[in-house]
Image (cartoon, rainbow, N blue to C red; front, side, top):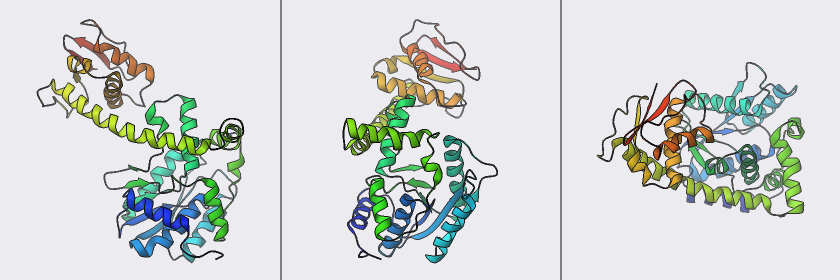
Length: 336
């Protein structure tokens, strides 16, 4: 190694884990390792911090089968795990996954299955500040609210017992690359990272450099900071919306009606009328999430929100799946 064991990056991640309560001591951490610089930086940092925290570490690698060298890539990560004396788990897709969304969904399902089978409390990924900036731009261009702009959070539950954690969100991709070079870590170069048919690659290779050159050299940090601010605000709004939803479903008497059933849903619109529009929309989005096969659109949320102030007996046209919302005096009823 060309540098001492305890670097400023070690100290930074140690402080981040402790101050943000990302992990407890003596926990079982399943680390997602692709072989790229971010994941190698992550596993090296966790290995070096392990004596201070007493973690049990395992490595999970997901082979999407979308590159000719994907099996060789998997063997490369397996050899690294063996050299570090860490348990290694491999999941290989049954067929090639050719879209970014499909690959991401399959990857999280695969890691969740490994964690459940082998009793890991946490799944840890190497997402960085750079990924956070790219995700904000990606979701902004697709159309989203604050939730989508802050989507890459420090942690989120995958099941009741498994937490997804991203400890490197204050570290840039440049920093992970420098760290790997300093410690001579064998990065596996993924040729698909240069393929401009993938939207995220175009954001990373074309859009962000353009913004840096023409608008703000620190745009990556600025966008990541925006995501961090939005995360706290979204958490606050979700808590407030949850309280409003409970009150509206109970009609103000403190007891929600028929919560064991998905439909019918019943909301007191007199209570909703007193709330800010931002909270009204969040309540309506929650209700639609219970009945729709996919995430509700802005138009669907607006259509349901409009019933809060609509005349009596107003109703919507059917939502996907056939449910209809109707105003009955002080109530909005959503039923088949």
